[in-house]
Length: 88
Image (cartoon, rainbow, N blue to C red; front, side, top):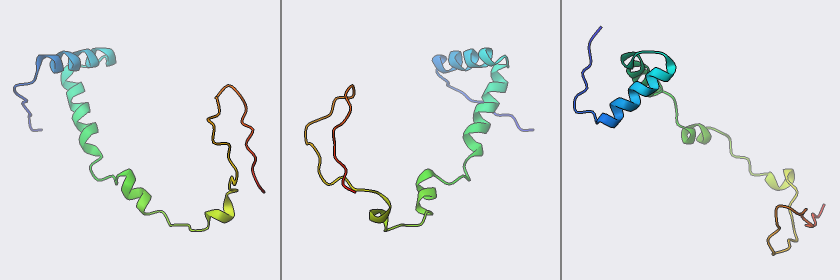
């Protein structure tokens, strides 16, 4: 298996890596491998935006959701119940 040497790493990063490894009970080297594997293993996964673009566009939401026709323009405090009227 090939070796990987990372030079000029900030001391804070090295301390954080060792602390993280210690919390997990593994060596810093094993934690470094796990971080690299996790960061690079998802390269082929589509982004959320790409996934959302695959969803069909539905133009009939007016039929599905009831609309609020009249609203009180004052903000409603979270502690009180809203007195909004919903037309049906």
